[in-house]
Image (cartoon, rainbow, N blue to C red; front, side, top):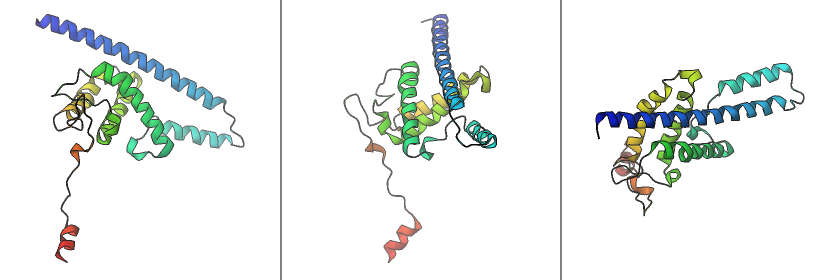
Length: 191
């Protein structure tokens, strides 16, 4: 393949990704608008205007959700569902190539908790960096360079969480760390 053909294919791929991102951004905007519309029409009961303003300021402070490992209960479950939608609806079909022995992917990725943390961090960055209002139009490029490429290389590489998984086998316990020596363990052994 000539350099010109490679450039043409890459340009087409980038344009396809841009179109996908724009569609997802539009969907997110619609969801945010419908959520804010529902919140604005809700009955505030006995709240004073000051209470409503404080609530708006607090919700504006948390524009993006906090890291998944800091959440609990229903909030964590909801965040996991949203993450799964993003991974399965955007990341896998739009960004990942075919899995191979050198570049693994596990369809049961959600059972690899270390991978879930990395994917959630990537998703948080993606939410911020694909919004032109916050980062202009270079955000997606920054996301690919600073988040997607290094994290996917780690996840799919020979030492990553999916390294023990193949198309026919799934293993989550292949990377359990050994016991870390510590002063307390040595003190117990001496007694």
